[in-house]
Structures are given as C-alpha cells and as structure tokens.
Length: 350
Ligand SMILES: [Zn+2]
Image 1 (cartoon, rainbow, N blue to C red):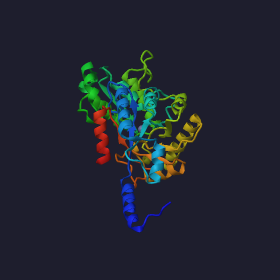
Image 2: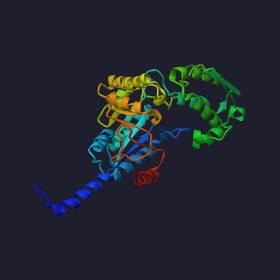
Image 3: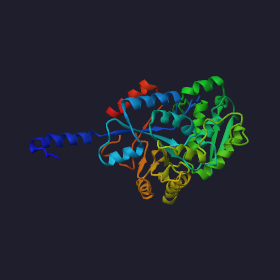
Image 4: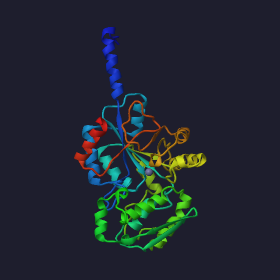
C-alpha cells in the first residue's frame, strides 16, 4: 500500500475527521402496527403507513439492525443515513402485522418484549383500562379508590355517558391533551393514578376498577378478537425466527426503574433477559428502559447484566458522543410517506 506524502495526508486526515464527526444514525421507536379506532397514546401505525415508511427507508436511507448500528457506533463508522427500527412492549401485531411487512422489504428490527404478561394476561394494564373506559356506553357516576390509605374520588359528571359521537371524536384525541370533564380526561386521570404504582399494588386496584365498570373479569368478550393482545410465549419464538427480528428485553412489569430499590431493578433487568433467552434459546443483548426512565445505577445494572446496548426515549440522533447504554430514539407516528420523509429529514438535519 502506498503511503501518501505528508502534503496530501493532512487534507485526508481533516476529511476523515469531518466524516467521523458527521457519522450519525437514527433509531426509530414503534409500538404497534395496527388499524385502531381510538389511540390515546398515538402508539399505532397502520399497516398501510408502515409499508410506506419502510419503502421510504429502503429507497432513501440505509436500514440496518440495532446491533449493526451499535457496532458501527463503537467503531465510529456509522453508514450515512443509517436507520434502525425498534418496537417496544411486545404486542402480537408485531408478529402478525409488522413482521410480514418487514420481511417483504427485507428490513431488520428489534422488538423489546415485556415478560410479565407472557402467558399471564392478554393485554397490558393501560390497554385494559382503555378498553374499559373508552368505548361507547354508560359508567357509574362516581368512583372512589383507596390507595396507600389515601382516598381518590372521581365524579364523572357528563363523562359518565360516552356517546358514539364522543367516541368517534376521540379517534384523534391524545390522552394528555383531553379537555377536563371529558371521558378521555377521566381515562387520563385514572391512568396517571395507576402509573406510578408497583405491579403488586396496581393489580388489586385494577380489579376494583373492572368490577366498578361492570365487567366480571378483565378478558375481552370472546366474540371479538382483542386487537390489543400481547405476544404469547410461543409467538416470541416465532417472531425471532429468521434473521430479521432481534428480541430485546424491556423488564418484567414495565416500572419506572429509577424509582425502584436496586434489588428490584436488578431483578426486573436480569429476569426479563433470562425469561426471553429461555424462550428463544439464544442470548438477549439489547435492552430498552420503560418510559426511557433510568438512573446512573440502572445503567450500571444493565451493563452488568450482560447487555451490550440499551435504548432510551430521548429524542435525538445517535452520534459519536452518544452513550451505547443510553441510546436516543425518535418516536414514529401514523404518518404517510410524505410526512414520514419530512420527519426523517428533520431528525437528521435538525
Ligand atoms: Zn414500554
């Protein structure tokens, strides 16, 4: 190999440095690929739009797996316009809807699965709450719950009755923007009350809410398939089949990790990893923090558990100074290809 003369070396080094500095990638965060009516957290992308989004990635970007991006980031050589896809939580539609579309475009993805629901329940608590409260009909006027010796009381007012028109209107309402006094606002208020509770405390209170709402148990009427369904254990293995989908861990009960004692954090992190490894019979090396929440201890515990990367929900690009255990991600919404293309340009070029 010819060694270039010093005169040519400096510009080459400058150019290489510039390339390193501009080496950046993007990690997309999805949750669901499904056609849904009401979507209080804007978690769903329709199959049609997901297909359009992958078409954009295939035509104008460099899709790669999260692990490839992590490797490239370590070596300071992220390919230009690199994009990795991730899904959080572990909905059945990731297997039934998203995987075939990913396969058609030959684009890899990582699915971070919550393990506590696997084989125990068909839906996450926030989806069960949505099903109970956000469907047309009447609910009792008052709700009183006692949590940690504190009484919480709601008077539903006009929101006790939820008409078909209200329901249709809420197709485009996000929970955190709901007007006070509306059914969606009541949903948001209950969600906020339940959110910080550890799973063991939340479960009995949820049972009370189910009883109050007039359902005998929290399962969906059998006549209707539950589109909010989570993956069954054997479906995690099916999702992992082939070489496009990586299974990552996302804790057991989806808590705010930093609010938990260290031993509980460690258990959430390590046991979710072990459960998934037993299901797919291979190492699980990617992790995603629920709500992106973590402390310095959480990050250390994740590293010590044997993962080689972890994702947050901080909206940013991945660049040279990104921490491999606090990787930023951007949230994708139900955008068509024009809007998605515009967002990608914005994310890459600020
Ligand atoms: Zn999550």
